[in-house]
Length: 119
Image (cartoon, rainbow, N blue to C red; front, top):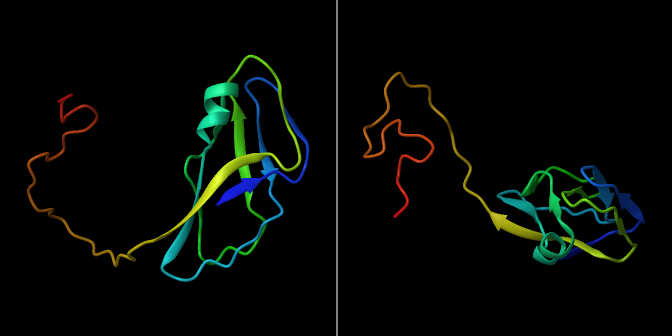
């Protein structure tokens, strides 16, 4: 689902703003909303989501606002009605955590950034 701005917002270079959409949703338990960027805004104007993807919890009932940042060297004016992000609703599996002093072995072990190679 496309999310549209309901206000005019000017984003100077290097700045960000929470852009209002005028939309509130009731997401059922076991699902989450994912606010995702629009590729055209990124490719053409250097706009990105500050926290991509943004998560909307099932208990949230407020207005969805999109945190946009301007990575370009030019100001950008978001106009009312402009598509600024996409909303995807997806199921998730709730996890019940247990404390443990030991973890099962894996082939990756504690290998971090770049430990799986390039190919």
